[in-house]
Image 1 (cartoon, rainbow, N blue to C red):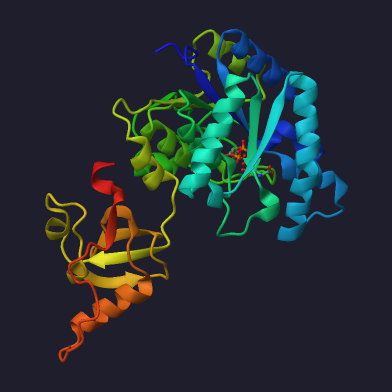
Image 2 (image 1 turned 180 degrees about the horizontal axis):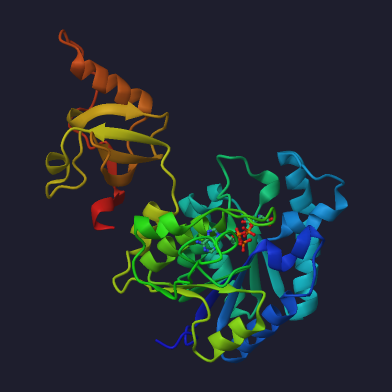
Length: 367
Ligand SMILES: Nc1ncnc2c1ncn2[C@@H]1O[C@H](COP(=O)(O)OP(=O)(O)O)[C@@H](O)[C@H]1O
Ligand SMILES: N[C@@H](CCC(=O)OP(=O)(O)O)C(=O)O
């Protein structure tokens, strides 16, 4: 596969490239990236940017070395403006700001709306620039890092390639900033626990998540059939090499048999709010996937409402499925307790009804 024959590219830019040294927005690295984007567009490619850096860009206006959570949000709100202004200056073409939270992405209606808006922007040659809406996020509502956000966005809009531009050449077998003998991995065809074991967090105070979140993002995007690159955005050479069809960093090869978009969304975007532990995988999913009844329940964990997404696991911790539940945790707990009770003369609940919805079900073993 020629690296840059892809029609639709999502390019994710890390904070260190936007505001090097936490010292406000700078054109230092962004000029090259903007030139790369223009070249891609001249080749007929569509580009969607996921731009981090609002916190790093806004930091200079807040006199602190140890900002609180609220102060970071204020920095993000300030820096987002500076960041969009610098992209507008360098790209000199119509741009659209899209600020998202995880709550937007895991709500089906909003997810479809985001997808439709981006399709319309691309059809009209406007470049969407996505970031997390830090102002309104809480721990529960946020994606938390733009690597995963970029992968979720890439899946939503059926991108062909995700390029994560960062401050190192790619994924090494150990952190190159702390190990001088670290070796770059050029190709990764399967993401295994040993790949995750290579990844450390971010060493600088600028980035969020380090390689851990980039591997999570790569796992999400290759499962959707999206080739994924991690490259060094500090180096002009990285972009020249991509345009010449050469991989300058780490290439995660896309899965030739991608998940269906709906299963991918359930598996990789939606978060579970609780867990139901069942007695027997065979019994529960034997040819009749949707038929998981209250008889199978051993334990209910977490608090959730009907319509929320839950994880279905077996006693040994094996993840069987992720699905929307037809019942609340409260009701399921009650059912489970009633079944345990020896003198059970109450029959209040729909014992034969499936506890999960067939329409929103991802069987994880087949994922
Ligand atoms: N195995 C590894 N290979 C490469 N970088 C690693 C590894 N483990 C940890 N890192 C760290 O990840 C950092 C990049 O992540 P991060 O700072 O979050 O960047 P960004 O802001 O671009 O998202 C590197 O600077 C490096 O310190
Ligand atoms: N929404 C945050 C992005 C945080 C983030 O993921 O940063 P990075 O690890 O540099 O991609 C910001 O704009 O500062």
